Amino acid sequence: MDSHTRLIAVAVLCSACGGGSGASPTAPTPVSPQKTITSFSTSASRTTLAIGQQATLTATSVYSDGTSAQIPQIDTIGVEWVSNDASVAGIEPGQNPSDGWNQVRAKAPGTTTITATYGSQTASVSITVTQTGTVVGWIGNLLQEGWIE
Picture 1 (cartoon, rainbow, N blue to C red):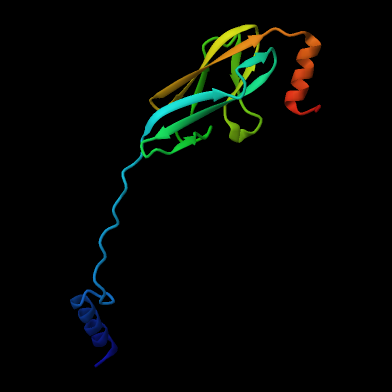
Picture 2: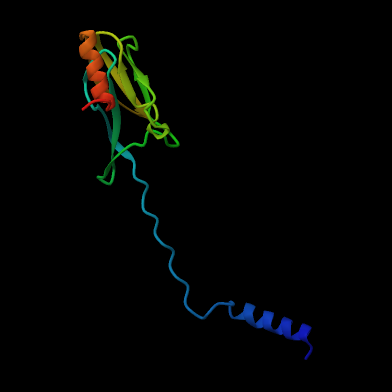
């Protein structure tokens, strides 16, 4: 038998037996249902700020399987933060690129609502801005930024 005929014979035998190792086929792995968001909340590291101070905003979801997680600030969908009165306190980027737009900066005395939207979910947190003396405000900012302890 020449090599070409042997190759054809091997191919026929392999196709007749399925070409496998003889083990029985395995059942497909069941797919778990995709978890969905059942509730959504937002918070701020501080809800009362002096003019010029910042607070970090956090969004958290509770899922259908009972787990909860802080939503990353930068992901495929993203959390959108909006201030209903940006003249009192506005949304700004964090100090690191991975922080996203999750900082609120106090601008003028008053109260504003910061609303977070993630997909079809929304949640809000109230921010109050107070007037402070210039020196006290500067010291507060230096403490907050880690320049003095």
